[in-house]
Length: 111
Length: 110
Image (tube, rainbow over all chains, first blue to last red):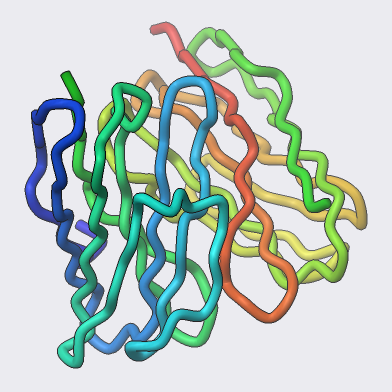
């Protein structure tokens, strides 16, 4: 158990819909990262937050957005969903940019 | 552009048959190289961080080494429970974002 929690574990929705994925970092970690893992693309960095502020952005689509709240939990919002958005979404947290610890992931299926 | 390439893509070993996984990287200003283990449908599990050429880390049957252009994950006398996908990642610049390789899927047969 990494100490990072993610909800929900599974999400099935339809094209065009909007979903929210939630992540709670390890106690004391200020940085939260979101990654997408698909079969053809591997693990891809989406976005990083540090203590509530956006720190870095990867190849995150404009339809996707994220935020980190004062209690340090983070949410990833995915809108206007397409079939190609089906993937595993992981959250990771770290302290002082050391090793990142990953959560169990949310499996998103868009039908 | 930062890039990580892992080889082989897949590796089948007999129990007790030692081998090595390779991770080649191109990065401007390496801040750290990371090894993770991932089981199907699970989140990556942190194994090691290496920061500079010549550094080595060990954990049970695993040993990670680092040079200026590549890293190796040596598996000594593997067991079936070592079967998993092993991911290599690098971080550079002033953020902690990780660039991952495609992984090596290891299968250890009893």
